[in-house]
Image (cartoon, rainbow, N blue to C red):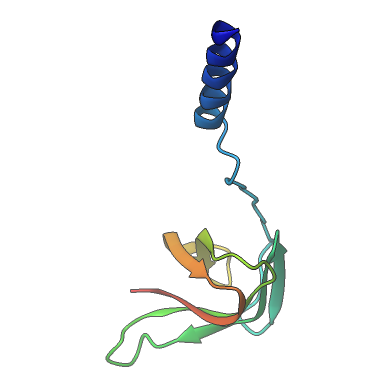
Length: 116
């Protein structure tokens, strides 16, 4: 009987290590969006809305990127990672912001992803 209990305990431990129960990965790919458009994206419990392009490249900040509103419908804080590609009007890649790590607390939040 002790062997059976040890085996079940070991099996549960192994499954917990191999398959993390709290990890959920979802991706959302969008097509080319003009900087004059406002676009919303739903990914799992997260909703990105009022996304707009901001150009501060001619100021002391010397950056450009995206701002908007982020709604987290879950009761938990969610960590998310985003990659944004910026293209010119001829669809040439001009910048890429990799691994923008963000945390969305429950409720509505503002986000600001800038490229230097």
